Structures are given as structure tokens and as C-alpha cells.
Length: 270
Image: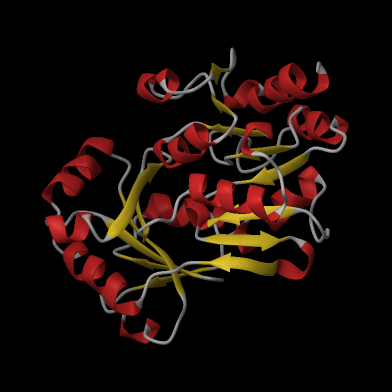
């Protein structure tokens, strides 16, 4: 019997940055099963989403943010676990990023700073209702005393981002956990941070057996939790390599109610 579902947000649960009513209704029908967002977003960016799924400001309800770097109990945004980047680590990536044709984003716990701003990314962050600031000067020294959650290179061109990864020095590749999301982000977290590691941490914290956890996603930053969960699922629109390692592939894509399908098939029909 499944006791917890972890769901990615973008291109999995959400349509136009909101939870469609079909997914909301399916979530509300579940009894004694936790629904936990597992996202690359900050906690501040998902408050409206938590309201839509009915877990906002509730004790014993949880969220996984920054690709697993932050685990929060939703009531009063109580931080259970946080693993961020040091300023020195972020500065390494920042200096390398200057030579690439990418927008650079640095997330602290509660804010996003955008360098070499791409207008499409500014529009995206506005739609996501993110707290962000565009920084015109390519200098991150003002972040020396901040808690840095994650670092991103941004470009809606996966081939270009993958070539950046190939170009990076081996010392960098060995120092960070790297992943892709939304077909526009190359993300850097501390080594060992992933949605899969966060799934295991939260399951242990809640005394839930891994076999009783479902994970649903669509992209490469979801692979670790799809592989870690008792039942790993990807949506129909995911790349074939992600589909091949999943236990189940939904018959519909995210914008047609993939999460609803998962809940109805594996929870409500049990």
C-alpha cells in the first residue's frame, strides 16, 4: 500500500504554473497518502501551488525544494534539512559562466539573482511569482554572506548545455551534483544532493518504507527519485531514456492529467 507520492512540478504536475483542477481533485480524494512536491524551485515559489493542492501551512505536510537541497515542513516553513553551496563553490561556477553564452542564476534560500539576463527567463520567473533581481554587473561578491542554495546555467538549448558539461574541467564535474531540468537549465547542487536522496531522507524521517513511495517526474533531475522510489513513474512526454528506466509511463502527458492518472491507477483503485 502506497503511503507517499513525490511529484515533480514543471512539466509533471503543473500547467502554466498552476495545478489543473483534474490533478487537484485527484489529490483531494487520497486518504492517508502524503503528496509531496519535489522541485527545483525555492519554497517561496511554491506557496500558491501548496494552496492549490491543500497542503499550505499544514503541519505534517512536506515539500522538497532545490532538487533535494531543502526539505521543509509546510507549517511555518520549518526547515528540516538544508545543503547549500559555499560562496567559493558558487564563485568557481560563476567565473566559468562568464565565458559561456548563458544566463546565470543563483538561488539563495529566499531569492533568485539573475546575471546576463535572458528576457525569456525574466518572463518565466515573473510567471512563477519568484522573488528575483536582475543584476546588471557580472559580480557576485554581494552574496558572500548569503546561504546559496543552488546555481544554474540557463539556455533553452539542451545541446549547448550538454556541450558545456562536456567542456567543464574534471575538477568541477567531481565537485558538484549536476542535473538538467525544463529543457533549459543546467543545475548545480552540492555533491550528494538529489531528489532521490531527499526521498530517502524524508521516507526515513516519516518511517515510511521506500517500497511504499511513488515518485513521478519527467526530466533528468527526476531520475534519482524515479530510481529510488518503490514505484518510479515518468510522464508520457519524457525522453525515451527516462521512460526506459521507469517502472511505469503514463498514457497521457502532464498537460492532460498525468498525475491524476497515477493517483487513480495506483492509489484510488487499490
